[in-house]
Length: 301
Image 1 (cartoon, rainbow, N blue to C red):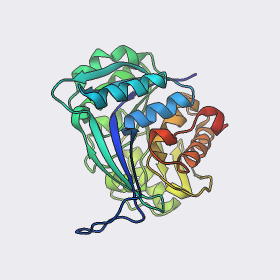
Image 2 (cartoon, rainbow, N blue to C red):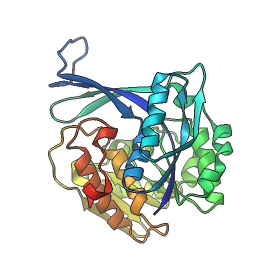
Image 3 (cartoon, one colour):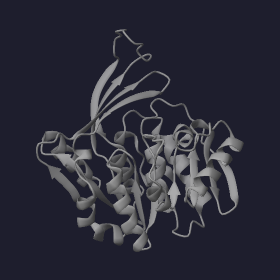
């Protein structure tokens, strides 16, 4: 069983289902409204835990009812929440998610408490990181906190996985040089490298650029096409499992969290781990909501 620590965001998601996306200045009817647990960090932690990882979390919530709810839900997933700070005078993060009948989504993110913890809080929980096999982070929390986490991981021979989402064009070089595996989607890969990712050839070009920036393993998720990886002189597109998507909200988070459950620290089973994660993501997109859609290990198997 891999030991995984996530440094990341925790949100209360407000979901709205619509027939089609609204245009600027337009008002349309919604079909369904509900709230659910979310946040890229929390989603990835739930995916890892449901794939039977020993999962820990470093992050923050507000001192409010939403924060209490998120902590309770993470504990129900058997996730170690001792690294989660409760921040007074800050609201728990929230995301407002619109999903249309084609399964496409649009998300507006309010950081709240997710941006109220930093390097100092991460350093306090260094023991969680040092006892891990992998540390996972995204870009919904302060980059300085992620750099600190990855530097602690490197010193302890713990492998680091960066999901550069939301995409940023000017990532600090010290973050990339402390990243063992980077997992952007095609849009995020283009934002970082300036190379439009349209096919395997352009994915290879973007991967080469990311290697030059200091990253050892590059995995670019390509939606319905699958996931392209480039590592140690070998590159390949691992096809997705073809399923009808009703909501793609947590597909990428499922991919990353699930991959961390199977991947070996020497990356010798990288393709198998990607294939396993593609299967998990294919289950996620057939369900509504972020964390409610994430499958368990027995479903994936």
